[in-house]
Image (tube, rainbow, N blue to C red):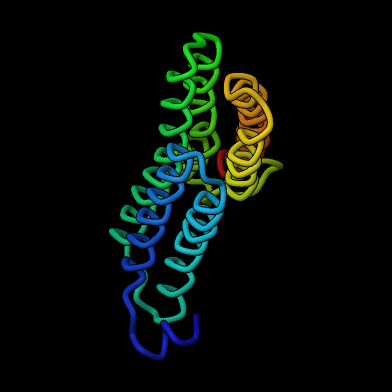
Length: 186
């Protein structure tokens, strides 16, 4: 990060890099090559974490940067999930496809809660037991498991983990938002 700050690199470049690496992870999933998935997910997480850190360290944070960050994060979440949905569709298993599509929706719930709470006046709520790092880990483990187990079973189990973890995280963030907003309303 120090190099990025010293050289005046744009935080938006890290957002774009995160999205590009998410596309690499998606490509790795479609190709069935887990090392590429690992590279893509690590790069995706690095981009997602460095964009805001660089913006704050350089003193160039701006409201539209927040918007770009959120768009980049959502695109970076969607790309590997969409690839898993394609793999599920290719298996011919309707159950795996439905679970993969529900997992995409569930994975977005924690962010929706955080953004809704922020719009209502709460601080941006992060954290919980299953955030973007844990989701990336689940996707990576699924990509490795494809080497040993049927894809529809891997997608089914992995999707249930993502659905459960994301739902618990959304509930945790909702509770935190409720507590904060009760203090504001008091």
